[in-house]
Length: 238
Image (cartoon, rainbow, N blue to C red; front, side):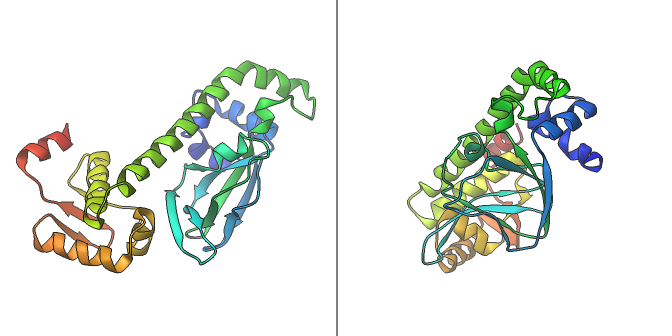
């Protein structure tokens, strides 16, 4: 576990804890590490889970799929990102999402239920540790959950637009503001972007071509450069 401390200490869940405290808490929440190959499932819709995952390397997709294989991408998680938190914190909740490895990755699973109930090992040391940091850990967990709500709220904002063009411009505008730049890379390839925005890939590609011809943007694979007025440019850089 020690080799992953640089990632863990920068995680919002472990904010304010020393390396030794992080290692002790990992033991108490029964942390386990697993490796997953690209395109393999980590969580499947219909299952339940007591653990949330933290990406240690690689990246994963949080998706919804129907019986006909249509995919709706909810988010993409990179190194240091969490997934499955709401379900892990809600005993018995059935997953309505699946999590799939977008590339070969390593995941650490944390049983957050052990923060909410007495440690089953009844270890005095770890009981004291959890009691000492209980409020901090719960506060950090709430922060993690709140961040996931914000991510999903962004998606709702984009897919709530009426047209393919409006959805694209809403997403690209938000990414530009998030990067504080008119030039940025997005985390999705073209098919993934279409699945994230819930639009047809061919229609999206057509709209991107139109936007390029009209001078709204330039793009090369995952890289985008937006063209806007000077006033808009200054607002983005604020």
